[in-house]
Every structure is written in C-alpha cells, then in structure tokens.
Length: 177
Image 1: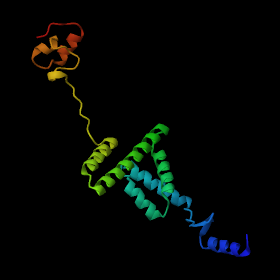
Image 2: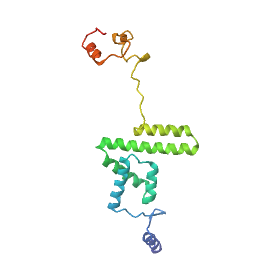
Image 3: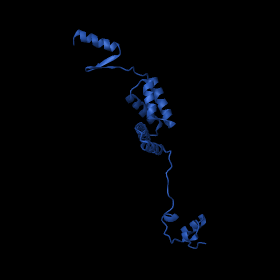
Image 4: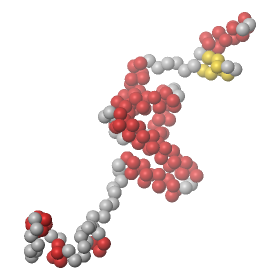
C-alpha cells in the first residue's frame, strides 16, 4: 500500500470510519455492558407486560442508535430470561416473532387500503396473544349431549339430568324418574 493510501486509511479510522473493500462504513460506538444490560431489562419488562411490538423495536433502534441485528440479539436474550426454560423461550420467541410479522401485515394492509386483511391480522394477533375466545359446542345435533343416541334413557327425562341421576345411571341404576 502506498504512503498516500495508508494516510487516507488512518484519516478515515481517526474519523470513526472503517473500510471494507472499496466501501467505507461508519463504525458505531460499542455500548457499555451496563447499557446492554439496561436495554435487555427494558425489553424484558415490556415483553412481560405484553406490550412488545415491531413498532416499539423500530423506535428503540432509532433511540439507542443500534442496528436491527443488535436489537434482535437483545430481544432474544430478554425472552430467554423471562422464559421458563428452552421450550418456553422458543415458544415466546416464536410468538413474539409471529406477532411482529402480523403487525407488519396490518401496517401493509392499512397502507394499501385492504381493511379486510387488516381486520384479519388483528384477529390473528389476538388469537396468538390469547385475547380471543374459542367457541366450543358442548351439545350434539338438536341440542342432544354428544355421544348419546336419541333414544337414550337420560334424554327421555325432558330436562337435563341431575348429578345424582347421572351418578346412579353410571353405577347401572336405569330407574330414572
């Protein structure tokens, strides 16, 4: 390398720039261990409250002056800490990643005017977060209990059987009042 090129390289390094091949990139200052710990704790606190979102992640990238890759490492560590073992951590990370993806779908749907897709992404997000109720049918056809034939003695009562009647029938007593 010529002296002129070496001098230019030293000037770039002293200005906080590094070279990679022909391209020069700005070197970001490294965060102190205390800053990293505080950031991971903040993410964990937000995640425990169920308030973590992709939008919040973008805000933190800007506020902290870090890359998305660095944030991803912080998020992974935060979810590892609040999880209860590897399986819970993996599940929490997948849930968080899927919620982030659904947030992105929602934003894209709104931006393109596709309100049907936006509502669908909200419903999916709620289901993934455990906020929606699942409907379960507890009766069979025409309101009959599941698994009982229409001519079953318990159905001939014209009313739901009492606990005592069910227990008696389970023991073999077929005399229903």
